[in-house]
Amino acid sequence: MKASLHFTLPEDQGDFDAALLGRNAITALWEIENHCRAIVKHGDPREDMRELCETIRAMIPPACLEV
Image (cartoon, rainbow, N blue to C red):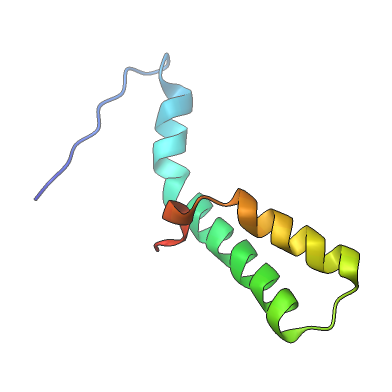
């Protein structure tokens, strides 16, 4: 199976950049979520740190974590 994306540059430069860097963004979100998970699960964070990590984790769409 193949997929092709076509962009009209320079008008679609933003969309082109997003498509090109999408995998990097998803990987970064996965790493952030994993780090926050480890803080909540294994660390001994202050309550405000735990709440921040849980808030950040809730902001990441589950589909982005299916790497």
